[in-house]
Every structure is written in C-alpha cells, then in structure tokens.
Image (cartoon, rainbow, N blue to C red; front, top):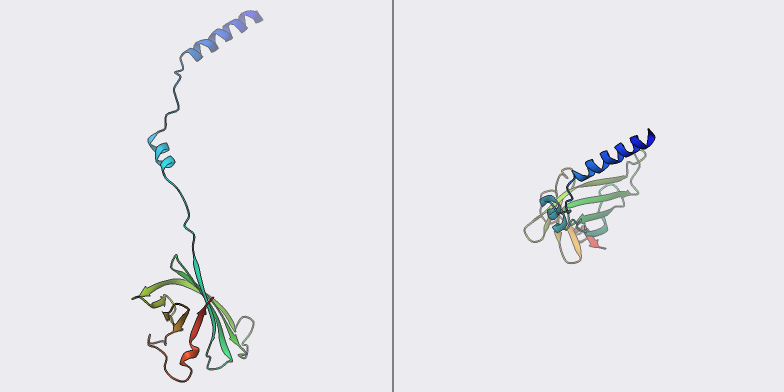
Length: 148
C-alpha cells in the first residue's frame, strides 16, 4: 500500500512538473529602466563664513553662517558679554533657504527680524542693513564674515 501511494505521488509530481514551461529570465521594461538608471545622491558642498559683527548692547555678535549648494543655510549666533535673560538667551540657531539676487547678493529668505542680505566677495560676505543697502559709517568694515 505504501509503495502504491509513493508511486501515485511520484507520478503526480512528474505530471505537474511537466506542465510548467521553462522560461529564460528576460529583463522586463522596468528591469531595464532600473538597470540603465544611475541613482546617486549629489554631494552637498558647503561654504562656511564666520566673524564677530557689531552689537548695540554687547561686545559683539559671534556669527557662523553656512551656505549649502542645495540652497539651504544655517546660522549659529552668540551675543558676546550681553547680560543674560536666562538659559539660551544669548545663543541662537537659525536656518532656511537662500537665493541669489544678481551676481553678488545673497538673500537669507525668511529672516525678517535681522539683516538677511549679504554681498558675496571671493573671500567674505558683507552684511547689508535691514533696508538692503550697504552699511555706512566708522564701523562699516566690521560687518563682514570671512570665508573659512
């Protein structure tokens, strides 16, 4: 009896295998698109600027500004020797998107309560006033962040 069941099971397996078609693995349209597409993440280059900007009620505003090639910016600010109003009151981090105006003016978009425009030179960024104009006066050369 066991031999008969084994024989029937073997025949059944052979019959079911015989009905299968042998196919080659041919690439589908989707496979060839994926195979021909190079997926890569572009390297984001950054340019860092730093300096101490003038401050009306402190010794200076230590500023580090990073501009990335993906049009984002980040800024770390420390108000040096300003009377503290509590933990974290003299140190800030900001970020957002930036864009160029013309060939040499960088605009930090979304920054409304502080200067947001800078003239770019080969080695520095010169901060513009809140009105977008160059700062005049005896401290005008102090409104500069140097390229790191």
